[in-house]
Image (cartoon, rainbow, N blue to C red; front, side, top):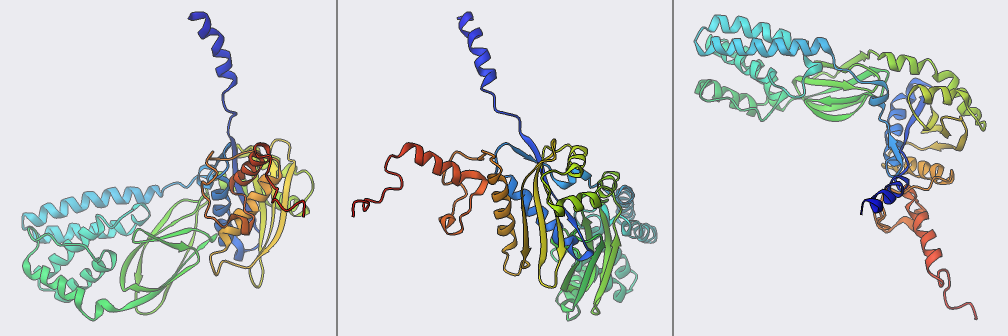
Amino acid sequence: MKVLLLTLLPALVLAAPPPSRRVTSLLVPMDPASEAGGVQMEGYMNEALRHFNGFTVRKPEELFGMPEDTNAKASLERGRKGYSESVAAFDKKEYEEAERKVRATLKELQSAAGAMRGCSPLCESLALYGALLHLRGDVEEAKLALMDLIALMPTFELDPKRFSRDFIALRVQVATGRTSLLRGGATVKSRPSGARVYVDGDLVGHTPVTLPALPIGKHLVRLERAGFRQHGMLLEVTPDDVESTTDLVPTAAYKAYDAQLDRVAGEVMRGGSKSSAVTALGQSLGLERAMVGTVKALEEGSELHLGYYDVKSGRRLGGRRVVLQGDEFGQLKQEMERMVNQLVNGSGEKMSRSSDPLDNRGGTEDWSAEDRGGKTKAVEKKKKADDPLDGVSGTEDW
């Protein structure tokens, strides 16, 4: 038995699957108008690459980082502590002390938006502040605090064990009043464009984005873009449209990447058989395969030069130049997936994520000639090898 096990071990080692290749998609924007679209296309291409077995797709945030705002994080911790102290004073009916502390807490939380993933402890602090204003008879100011609270979180409930029935009734009055029905527009921009925008915790798009109908009052806005520090703010929405523009702070890894882009863009657009710039860039990012291209905004749509490269040798395994007509009907994702499939399959990569020939198939593949993840090619090859009647219709003698 011991001899048998020893003779099987080398076979098991030889049967191990080959190591996965690290791959990603990188697009160089040739003008500011194409920055946001380039980020979106990179995401679609990386989704398509994940359908291929044998690839490990590196996300942009893994390559360039996307650090938290450490100052905002520290402000959030101080805000949480300040809220706890404010509540303690409120419960002891030390209302002047509670108001002093909660005012300082709200000021601290203004700087904590970049670290907040929900409205706590901001919502709780606003509720406490409104209750204190109501207790000293400043009803109109209390209503304004409640308006901000409702804008941030319409479903926030006041604790009847802590707050008076009159204050809870005031909250209902504000929530059902005409003022609460008012809406305002907000446009959120960033330099560079293409940052994910979260409003009150929900993803609403990428910069530049216009939100035409937000409830008036305060809203938590957070911006995230790979290669840049996360950024947040409290945006005050009014019946008049507001606009906010943020300069994002790049990471050291992104700065090093950005310094190589001019040379990379030039070699990709020339379309030669090799690119030393892609080799240098890919090796600095720890890649083995890369979809590298340039994107330029046109009057209608955009122009894309795309190459598929072996990073070690710099060899161009395939390339495409296309004019894209925008994404009015949601077709951009399918177009990018089709290009990735054509380039990878055309390079001779024999990979398929699933052994199930029906996996990810909707029944329309023959119409569009899609080959998602190399599955169609693998299935057709198997049919030709196994079925002697494949391709025979029965009418050949006629």
